[in-house]
Image 1 (cartoon, rainbow, N blue to C red):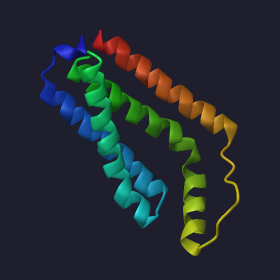
Image 2: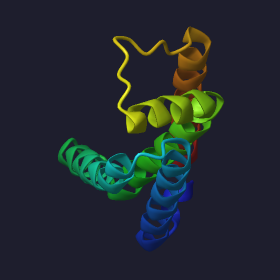
Image 3: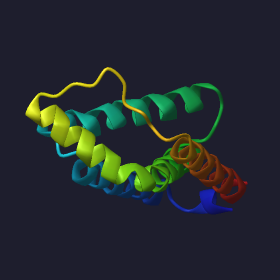
Length: 127
């Protein structure tokens, strides 16, 4: 359905999803070293995912849609934990290190569910 659109639009969607996700993470985790490297890591991972998908026989447009929707699902899923991320980042900036960072299980379940729902929507829209 959506893959009949020109591939340029899917590249634009992927870039927009990357900008939205990285902007949110830079706001939630104000550690300069983190938000400088984070977008490059996602560009490498996204490029690898698209290349792997093409190698496995999927269309490039399908893989771009999946990557974009997964990033948006991850952003939505991490939204409830944004305050904890900010507190932890401020502690790290002050030099405080914890032995363990307790990530609430309900937030983890919500994050996983939102990524899976968005991936499901992407699969349904690319058929």
